[in-house]
Length: 588
Image 1 (cartoon, rainbow, N blue to C red):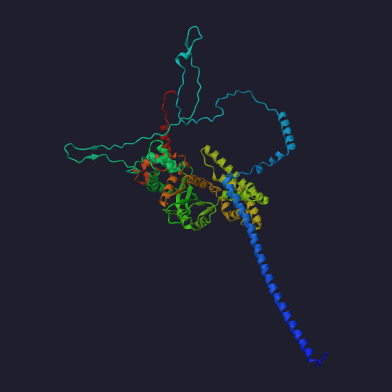
Image 2: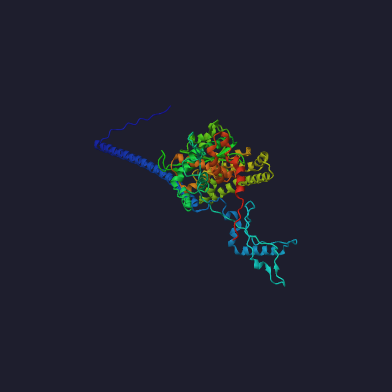
């Protein structure tokens, strides 16, 4: 049983002392409460300082990361502006022995050992005769050029032998021939199309005049040959129209750049549209299509001044019927790009090869197209990381992606290209089964190791760094990057389209912009004709000259189809051979 003790406090005998103690306790309580309040305020202030410190720490980390990224971008821009455009491996990485240049003793010993080995080596050479030509260092002129013989003979008195007792003519025993290229500048003349008019002297009938032949630009000074020259100069040679105008002035032909531009807009925007439409229809029958785009500046448009417009290039078709199509696009939206996959008979049903633009993923999903990526774009991302980073580890990793994984895949594709050339020399196509076997046996294991390597590095790499962007791009694009392994007819990259759009970009450096959307589409149509000629080994000027002559008289689809570049190749080759028949000038 618990015991409780009751303590009874006796009342204090001194009320004043009790009051003092109460006052002292009250003061101490107030002091304690004030200290607690100050401590709480101090704690809140420390928490604020700690929060500000964490915020500053985070901002500092972001600033450091941004500084690294900006430094990478600056180095990349400098490399793009001042450096080489090639993505070849640096000399130090390509030749590990380059460091031996500074090890003089080792280098001298190696040279002495090499010289000793060379002295001890003997090679047996069979006896032979070698005729050394005076022009052995010069490349021979091809046989397809016609030869014009210009004989430089001796005077008659020097062709007589004066050493014999009875002078007699010298016998011709041989000759020396020197070949050089001959160039004839263009000649400008005026075509007079004469249309006789007939009338009955008795005035029984009205006068009759011969009908005018159809021409591509009625009521103008432009002949088909002149239009072909201007079109070829701008869209094949990349000359702006004011330079073409200046060149014509040297031949005393006064045509302003504005006149030439009006002609090009009329021909490209109206006259050749039926031909371009047939080429576009042929592209939709190709088993796969490349696509890419490049910016273009338009002076007059609904968009703000300086806004980007685009030229879209599509390419495809079998050998001998390659197709390159350029089109103007106001805005690079999914809906805008999708229109290039819609033909007169419905949506395109083939396979699509493009870069990593996400809008093409959306289009491929909507139209149910099998989509293939570009391994070259993946390689470029790692090349950028190798070029701009200051960290040796980043450069080493980026170089490993290029040299150990992507490089071997392209070497295998080089073997496939060499095999294809061998089969073409025999007049046979390379079997797709051979390509599929090489890719499955050689390329597939390399790409599988590459994917494992990417998955291991990606979590620990800053996503906004150059290496992080390269790894992220490869991971996102991976299904499209390896899809070519199961489709031997598809290339590993979009380089073919990149090469064709580079032709437009090179010309853009000279003429800079288009006036409006209609002239941009006109230029795109003429670019399509010229580039399609080039990839099918058709001489652009000869084709354009023939096209501009015959197109006004073509009224049916069959007649226009006969004017497509691959359908005119044989006829233009025969015309070229006839035009190359030599004329015999007098001896110099």
